Image 1: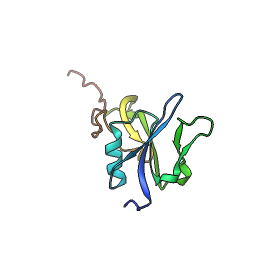
Image 2: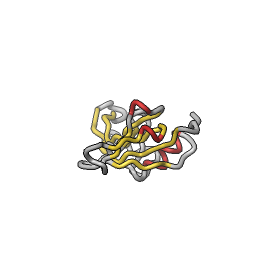
Image 3: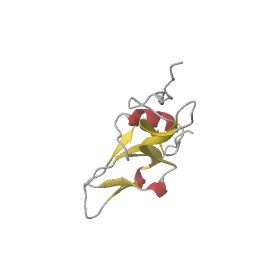
Image 4: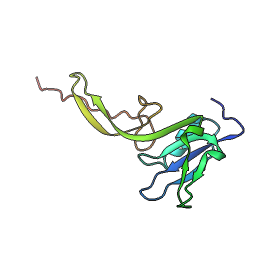
Length: 126
């Protein structure tokens, strides 16, 4: 998807008391995800939207957020997923896998690379 001239990419850093929004220099949505990932933490958001979608809370001028409804793309960075061990199919919680909620089947490690460290069943000695 190509970004329109009026839209830009933004990363929203979600804090306990204050949220901040930062512009991301990228040519497309995939590139924006790669660039923003290293600065993001669990629960942070990424969006493609016009600058008018960046809002300030009237009561708290340091609180900035992205109006999700004004975005053409919007995602939240999540951490952890249920996975299955091979070959048994036993479920386990993989706490080191990261993903964006708009692509929940694409997992990353903490460096933003493809996650490949899935658990496997222990092989029994014969």
